[in-house]
Length: 116
Length: 111
Image (cartoon, rainbow over all chains, first blue to last red; front, top):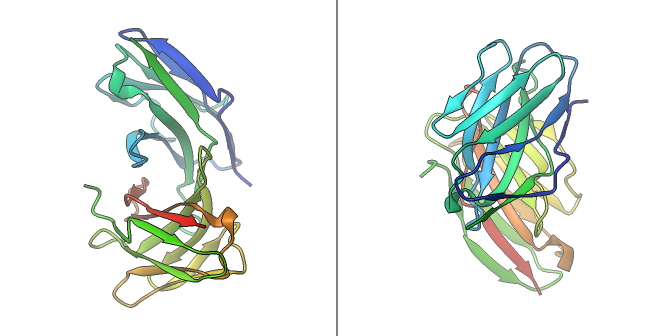
């Protein structure tokens, strides 16, 4: 069974600095999707970024980028120029690309604090 | 706005009672997922439906049940409620592009 592990329950970063959130996963599949979701205090789940496993290029969305290492099964999120609004719980998630198994598995989350 | 609608947004009830949470997926999405999130916890997968049929089951209690109707909306029924069932219940849908789109959640408080 696939698993997703986020080893950092909490992290803090100074405003305007860069922070990296770690995520590792375990799967025997070769084709899959990976996601980072953000959950601010409002508790709405917001998609931050997605990565298809077949793409070698790391996904980027403005200040958010990932470091996808398929062989190492690692999928870290880098937030550049951290802003107060980035304070949230961040969840890493995995989904198989196989149509018969589209259950999405979430890690336990990393709570990110932004220090002014 | 994700396009996924959940009602009610807040619900307060007593132990032993039964409640129904409702979810309308994004237009065109056939899959509906239900997740439970207790305070400061991660998301626990409960159950998934695809076009009216149960597709996958997670750690859903026997006191909980769900269904997806022909119009694709889904309901999660929680019965014999206990204090520990207090949580945020999320519904999400997707169309096959990979990511889930989440509703705003239904916050259940059991007193």
